[in-house]
Amino acid sequence: MPQVGIRELKNKTSEILRAVREDKAEYLITYRGQPAARLIPVEESGEDVWTELERLRDEITANWKSEKSAAELVSEGRR
Image (cartoon, rainbow, N blue to C red):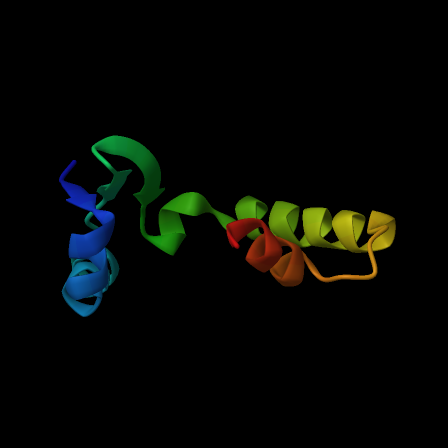
C-alpha cells in the first residue's frame, strides 16, 4: 500500500482520489512520517460503516452539552 504524506495528499488530491475511485487503490496517509489514516474505496468500507457513522452522529448530537459547535471548540483549541 503506497504511503502519502499530508502535504503530498494536498498537492495531488485529484490524482490520488482518481486512483482510489478508478483503480481501487489504497493509500496510507502519514503525518510527520507516522500513519494517520487509510484511504480506501467506499465499496470496500461497506454500508455498515456509513450506518454506524450516522448512528454516532445522532448519539453525539443528542448528548452535546456545549453551546458551541465542535468546529468552534476545535478552532479555539488551535489558538
